[in-house]
Image 1: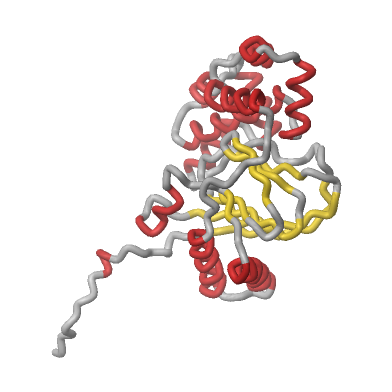
Image 2: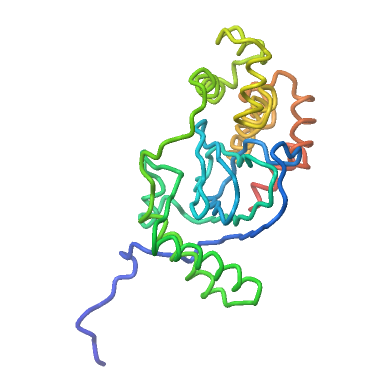
Length: 280
């Protein structure tokens, strides 16, 4: 029997895409600056790519605020606290892609770098290529393109993103005092009892704090603190914590109140959420 001179060793290969799964959404709709149905600050278990087709939008990611120019993208990783902020009442067009994969694998090392920046800017040919890839992926989904075709567009998009990270991108100017407050909430949400704790710690009036949050975050201080706590609770539930552990470790002192808030936000109780995550 003929034996080839080179024996491939697939077990040593660095790249495997068999576990990659994704979802895609493209929308054009009139968005209001203070839309009551807008997603609050949240996290999830996926890599999310937000591509700005023609929107006036900023993104809050892990406490830092980034403008997203038309044709650019924001990428958030599993566990990143984030929210989109539409800055004006206008017709907004954008695409979102959520990706599940083994991002600890060598081929995805880029996404785990400590100096990872969520803002990705494109110039010239790269800008045209990114827009074409988003359009092609949307068309392939709508027209029943093969899974291989769709995966090819998605992988090419990830490669393009890796080549066009905007390292050290400047952030829009939030008041320094507000940035300190956001950082404090993100670090100490479990021990901050209420908004009064924030006011006394940072020597700011309730009216000023509310005005800052409305202007820059399109939220209230209480809503933001609550969202950060709920986001931490979901991470703990996914990680195997009990409902009581997730409640208390996230800064809620009353489990009944926690369950009501959780169900209002996610449409199911923490226990049901935990069971469904365990079954995935």
